[in-house]
Length: 81
Image 1 (cartoon, rainbow, N blue to C red):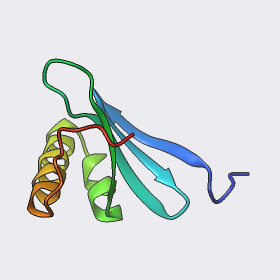
Image 2: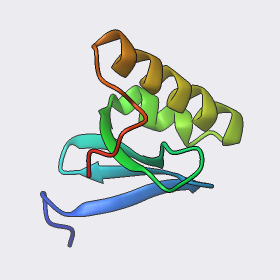
Image 3: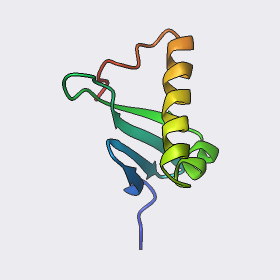
C-alpha cells in the first residue's frame, strides 16, 4: 500500500518527469541549454493528466509552466533543486 507522502513517478518523456507527492503534482525537468539544470515545479492535476497524453502534450505543459514562472518573476532556467 502506498503512503500518502510517498513520491510516485507518473510519466517520463526525455528530460521531463511528472511526479505525484501525496495530493500534489510536480514537473521535474532539465531547464538548461548547455548543461544539466534540474528544476522541480508544482503543476495542476489537469496539467499532469494532459502531459501524460504524449510528447506533444508534455512539451506544451512544460512551455506553459515556464511561461507561468516567468510571469511570476521566477527564472525557469535556474535550478531550484
